[in-house]
Image (cartoon, rainbow, N blue to C red; front, top):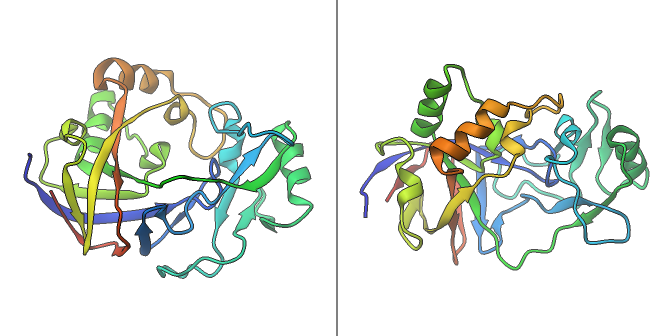
Length: 234
């Protein structure tokens, strides 16, 4: 097993799956993933079919946040706030929100809770992001990959995707294991703030040069609170 150490640089959660999320300074992580992360999703009315950014990139022009988060681990509530591209705010349980989303996205929408059998968090390594930017000759934004945690560690770029499933990794005081590398869909190629512009060069590079993997999924069977600035080791 590779041995490495580093620091948690940033943390993000996405209260509504497919919309832009919020930076947090700490969060509780457990069997179901990060508290407050991807709790809700957009669905085609009356079906289990989800809308996602690959088919509706305009979704990423919308944003969601927990109004009470204040950077705290317990900063969630009954319903997150959803912000239109104009900045107008809605409670996620407002009966008028689906119509506002439908008008902007061009598709009928229901906002519903996402049912999960288990959770996981997506971790992106800063060294890999930097090397990817160097390979393409321009900055590639971390937001394209929708990570929960961004870390700096003394691990060679892209080496994290070679870690075997089950490999132990410690974040702060929490014990995690590698579930698998993240196999990328088309989403990172779409502009991360909903401008509906696609970076096909990035998409091809991830597939051909990186084996279509970027970032790793971690799971835990315990509950732990992790914070920006906490150590990471594996």
